[in-house]
View: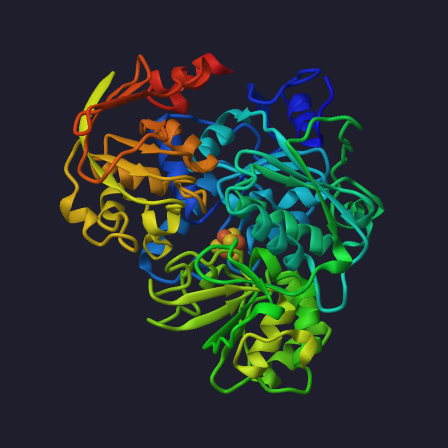
Length: 419
Length: 159
Ligand code: SF4
């Protein structure tokens, strides 16, 4: 039986030689993740079921990132519940104010995920770690609770779509544009229940940050996971960040794909997703004038160091438009420190932007940058659903850090190449 | 199992942000959460929903975040079953894991129709339109989870 990369990882963790699409399997997990919104629900379930010890106190990550620093009393009660659970179960990877970063930027950086791992997280963007050649997918709180107790999860073996990448990206175009382009083509349910497997000669031209950003938004196409093959760049990243031993899997040459899409990276352009679906994309040949009130640069999609570097390149020596509230969120403490040392934070503050501690904050309309009725934001985040960043009648336009920084300066959605 | 109920109908791509907006997720108490169910899509929902009603959606129902709060608030509101043309996958597994019945069905259903759903035989009857259709029953593995009342209690057998 010829298998895709994702199917091979599932088979290996289910103790099987092979698996076929549609089959339901129980598999062993390498890591179980939860955050300050989903872990409290999982802990309720865990306690209700009367489970005592966790399966492995090293293989659980609890990341208090969504409403951090606690935005109100209720949020504080939620993190307290998780903090107490982590202490009781001696969970090693508990991240709170001071060490916390946005989970999907934090886990790879801390070396908690490597190639070949099977990871579930009670957060839909858990699919991010496919960039490292791992099978990782978002689940709910009950799955997380069972995962913490038993170290196992159930999976329906997914079919797959293949994206064959060629060439390399033009200037001012990045990973975000690749994934927005794809979602614009296949739709928000274009890969429903499937794996999105990236391959081809173009892969090597993409940085790890680009790959993390691309896999991050696989869920916005409905996918179960996104995954990249392991190459020199992946190996270098893993050896710099992790002590774990990676296991490299690759797809069989004649594995079965529902669809194969060829993408010439050099033909891609800066892409913006208009409200209220990530698939509602446009490029600048077809862009009305859209005045904006806020720019958000950050999140698990685009809050990594290279995102801040490119934003700083654009903002350096310039001022943001006085009508545009510009908020920049480094995704982790390490990224924050690197950005500080490289002088990026100074550039942002001098340009008139606010720089925040790592938090999910405005990305989910939690706090730290909520929109009023009728307001519009350009955000490097991943969802532009109704009410996502605040009032149900506000609007979110999803874009790359390049477009977001350029738009902060002009006050309208702007092609960075025209600055 | 057989249920009968009145339809509250929505369109395609009903996402978890409109089912329960993130601004309310600073609690995990189902009652508090359910007071805001569907608020950003249909502010009248909470007032008009009756225990036993059936929620109907189009394609990709429950897309977006992994928040289990979404099926939890729907269940807590009294909805007996969600019928949709297709479900986003995390919502699908969450609904099964918490014991909220869901059915994939593409036949024509309108707001206010009365439906009868026969889970054992995979038959859905639209009593208002006098039509009926079939839906595929859950595979054995998932049936076990549902019959045990959720994933946790089923684990002893599934491991
Ligand atoms: S940054 Fe946004 S999308 Fe990412 S984990 Fe936080 S809330 Fe979710």
